[in-house]
Image 1: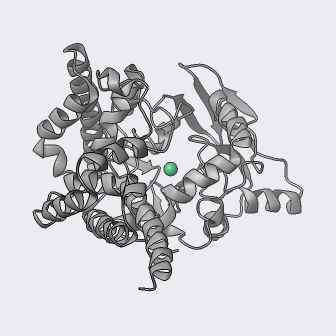
Image 2: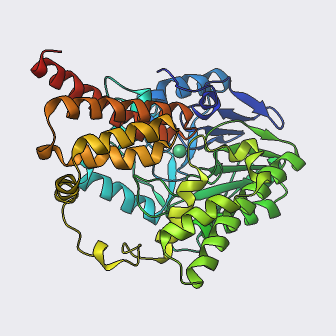
Length: 431
Ligand SMILES: [Zn+2]
């Protein structure tokens, strides 16, 4: 698996495992970190990685201990936290061990059921979200939703808590919504350790993924506030670097919580002022505090501030987001563009887009060149080809400048599609 940007190395877990506390606690990095706790009566595992990293994580666990797995906890039911159980399951069968208790929130089971009815759709979406790490075979993105291990202990309801003891250690689990509605985080008091799952993931919280369902910015912030109260010394995030030291843990949780409260409260304030999305979005870009920009843990390498604005708006508002009734039942965008080209010829739009591009007004250039591309029936093949090439050029520049992995993949997917279209048209035109 190749990783596109240096900042993503830690995010994808490409660093050695870490042993901490008294030597019986470990972080096994993967795409989805695993927390491993050894006790005198067996192992507690918090999260298994993506299926493709399962054997690597299993082997790493087995270099540290040969004890039986007694508990497996799902921080949530995403494919990079609850699907890499295969080698553990195989070992249990081979050794004739009892299956461990598997702990998840009731919404995790609903999630697994949802995956079963939407498998082709999710494979399609994930092949786009993770395109750059699996450009040819879509194996990173494609994990069969039929191969799940259902929880044996369900945490029920919005205020769910669950505690258990193993080998004299206490494990306290809490449910809070955040990236998902089935999130669970773990507090191990004797080890002063928190496992956050994706409630902390070494990037600006992925609270507004443009491909995925509604997420929960305020609940997320409140979950982080609850974690701060534990005064943990060690923190295993859902992805990325281990955090060690009471102050460092507190700082990471506090600044992330502050950023989430900020986005939430500022969007809510503007909703209450009677503003539509466009105004809210651009005002929010203008007021993003400098201090958040400087925080490594808030780097927009996966989720990003821009997505978080969408998430908060969508949490409280429906899909009619412009306040302009023209947008309520819109015509086809291709038909609209064709009408524009009846007023002014496509060459004028193309030349105008070139001017904007040369002036570095990339976003405006994209809007203008789309009129030519969408009004295709009024455009000759040569100009259409030039327009495809211009759009591709702009998007490539945008992709290079884009820090968010998800946003960059969206743009690069479009570049790849344009490349295909350009190739076919060039062949047709014999160019
Ligand atoms: Zn994750």
